[in-house]
Image 1 (cartoon, rainbow, N blue to C red):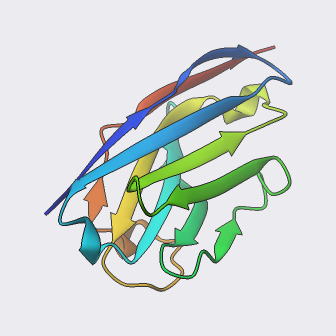
Image 2 (cartoon, rainbow, N blue to C red):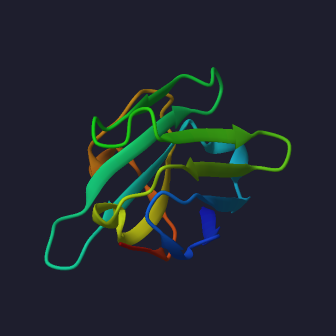
Length: 124
């Protein structure tokens, strides 16, 4: 099993930045891919960004491309999401996710492990 714990959420003004962290513990050697998803009130959970832990390949939702950056530190077993130029529509609970297979995945069912979520609120 892998446990994921997010941190770094909060309240920020539009145009500001936040960095989310996701610390993995347990059987971290089994992690193949990682991702960030978000869910706004009344909306479905949506893919934000993904990364292949071994090769570092990254991919993004069109809505965040150019503003968000996903990365990981294999030594610290931590995944990050740097969010710049934040907009009010980025307001959501952000979830860290990880899977065992090292392939790109935009669908939630590609990920086996999930964090508890961290709130990001962007004021206008």
